Image: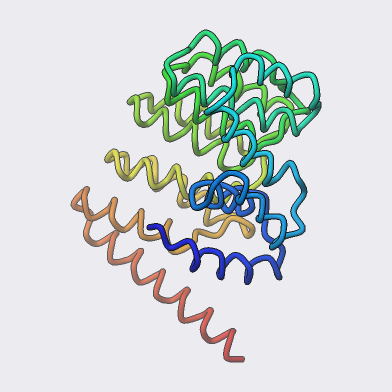
Length: 262
């Protein structure tokens, strides 16, 4: 919305509580868009974030527009190693896809180490880039490696589940979900899969997951999951089940209020 000053004020407030890397990167992007490149480095004056979190984004974006990108990538590849390189290389992959050079994008992608060396957040970004550019086979391969090496989170699962539902591959979507059952953030995976099932009229399947989720202490359905089931029941004409679920949600909320007041 161009309200950079408001964003900066909110950011300064967030820094007191420990802004994460994604927040830092968003601010770096904002600085780059709001000011001339040389002034954008003022970002260092308002945060103690490391250079690779913020200035890298600024410098990289500036030089992608002015330098020979092939030479520039080689400079980064030789200088940076490990997880920092992964994040930088991902930007190059996205850049080349957006500029219609699939060959160079995939060559750059081949340089990114996969397995335990890959951060889940970086892997999730790569999955999104690959899927949005029609590289479904490569995305599935990357997903399987992330699951196998336990370098994934709920977003990893949800990105692939959403893609499967988008393509009408419902069996594959449940296969993806099942692979993640022992992983981190399973509540978000359950919630997302329940929502996708309800959206596609698969209420019985969603109901099974909802009940399974309810049976675990650590995976109690949240309000959005309840709403997904209620909406699914209504669309399926199961009004009594919708009302029953709605009442259960109301009772749970009242219980939380009571506990809080005590």
